[in-house]
Amino acid sequence: MKTKYIKQLFSAALIAVLSSGVTSCINDLDISPIDPQTGGSFDQQGVFVKGYAMLGVTGQKGIDGSPDLDGQDEGESGFYRTTFNCNELPTDECLWAWQENQDIPQLTSISWSPSSQRTEWVYVRLGYDITQYNFFLDQTEGMTDAETLRQRAEIRFLRALHYWYFLDLFGKAPFKEHFSNDLPVEKKGTELYTYIQNELNEIEADMYEPRQAPFGRADKAANWLLRARLYLNAGVYTGQTDYAKAEEYASKVIGSAYKLCTNYSELFMADNDENENAMQEIILPIRQDGVKTRNYGGSTYLVCGTRVAGMPRMGTTNGWSCIFARAAMVQKFFSNLEDVPMLPADVEIPTKGLDTDEQIDAFDAEYGIRTEDMIKAAGDDRALLYSGVGGGRRKIQTDAISGFTDGLSIVKWQNYRSDGKPVSHATYPDTDIPLFRLAEAYLTRAEAIFRQGGDATGDINELRKRANCTRKVQTVTEQELIDEWAREFYLEGRRRSDLVRFGMFTTNKYLWDWKGGAMNGTSVASYYNKYPIPVSDINNNRNMSQNEGYK
Figure 1 (spheres, rainbow, N blue to C red):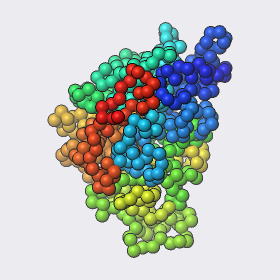
Figure 2 (figure 1 turned 45 degrees about the vertical axis):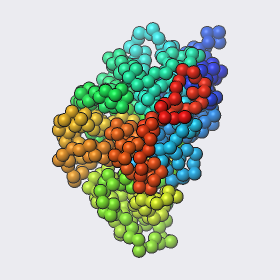
Figure 3 (figure 1 turned 135 degrees about the horizontal axis):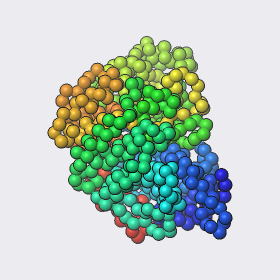
Figure 4 (figure 1 turned 90 degrees about the vertical axis):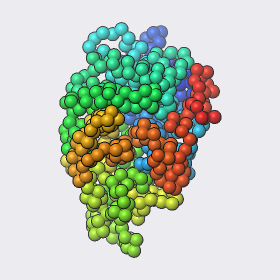
């Protein structure tokens, strides 16, 4: 493959396309120039692969040093980390330990502004990726061979997915379908919703049948699941609900070749791209590898961010001690927090003799505070929490956010293999991120049926059966549903979207610790249901308007 670089060409287009104050550019993109005078050629396969790679990496040299986007923190500004932070950090699921970090207090308390840097990061990343997708589609327009048609369908799917993130996070998008210097136009609400729906409908026939695509590429089931997600949230996006279609497309996914993994924890382990038990549920993963795709924004973020030095079986040599569970999330497994296995207050932690995993395990076992004890006490395999002493004495909840042990540790994401074999790297995980998995179809259908007045117990109990949950649901309520979404999908980058749909994100309908900046939670202004358009884009693109409520 030729490796002539096109930094200047893309830079000019991106400044217009993203219309951001950030000097955005593509550095060292490994394709040939598209200017015919240079004598280069378009590397179709290289740009196609880049379309998927952008979900999990942030540049051309692995960890850092040659970022896609200049002017941003490369580790912080990748697709998954930015969308994850916006959908998780303001919710009832987790807290960020270091509140002095930029914009973190605003995310914690739902009080961001159009000048917030983390809002800009996700906005620019989504726009950058769409620009790449438009470039590929322009270069392959008119090609009719079967493989190109399939690649175009998949790239259009990824573009539709990114526009869905714009719709869900911002309620609108700076919209373009071609690679050019023209400013994007504003497309919002019903108009953007209809566009995404039509795109997914048009490309479906050219996509792989379910489970026939190479692992890591989108197939028809991914298409159907994104449509089900779109329809489930139709009331938020358009003001008109469409639960019947959400049920229809969720059922199509459930009736396809995908099956639930029989062991919940294996979905989040380092060999989830080799273990057939996990692969049969994962519809679209973000591929990760400890050697080939090192970065600070994918599963490295999820594993390292939830560990601190001293924890047993960390799965990494680099515990960042950043993300821990809010008390409200623990309550999804223990309605009475007094039932949570914890080290008794009168027991001192030894200053010596806790140097190995085995020694920590032995101490934790004595007091029943291992993760396996947590699972047993919760009666649910999904309670992958740690209350032991590795890394320090933990609290369940805190009256001041001061450090990592102010809450229970979440050990859902792991850099260990289910077969016990070695992983690729001691620091950077191999664990793929299941961006779409079958369980979402079950809960989508359950909620859609419930909203239409039907019996949703079957789908919920199917997931509880998989989790060896000792409590089967008898009567579905709205609170039971929103809690089940958390039990199944906590720390998977979607919680805010669910809370908005249930009318719980900003209101006093449901309060959790530190919502609105109050220890016991308080409501916030309703305009926080959408993120603001970054002030940099408002200043640079006359076509974009600010979301209501923001100044």
